[in-house]
Amino acid sequence: MTSRSQESFSYIRGKVSNKDVYSMILVDTRNTGQNNIILEEFFKLTGLPLMEQEKMTLGTAEDRSKGLQVIGWVAKLKLNFEGMRSTIIIRPWVVRGLSHPINIGMRFMQDQGAIIQTNKSSNRFIIKGESTRTIGIKAGMFPTNTVDKKFPQNSGQFQSAGKERRA
Image (cartoon, rainbow, N blue to C red):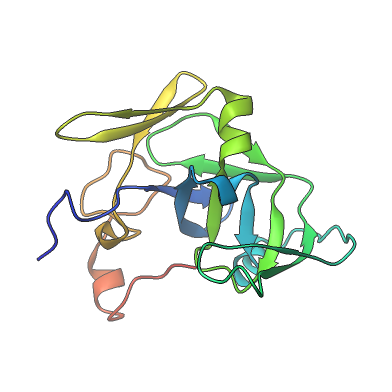
């Protein structure tokens, strides 16, 4: 069993505004996380147009020699974070082979004045005067208890499928 101190609590629950497309979002404070980036497969679920750009690659902590291919960018991706009323707008790069559906980067967090507040019992991601708890990847996309009506609870419909629906 993984203890709280061993698991990284670097994720928040999010969804694409006005769509039933949900994802665990990595709050990426590392140097390589300067920009907002989304996985190509997740981008396809949004139904948004791809803005093309010159081919480029991003270096990653896992494989600096090869990098990840950027295939374009999204002009306006509207997201809702669990427990927050405000809609957050990002303009992410679309990346092939990314290990997380969405990474919120340090540059965006600095531009928005985001705060990561920590204490012994919980962590919070604060942006635009609102906050949401940060969670570990093992917490899963659909919580067993949430007061946010934009997010379904982990009810029988998800359990009966044998796995959660998520990007």
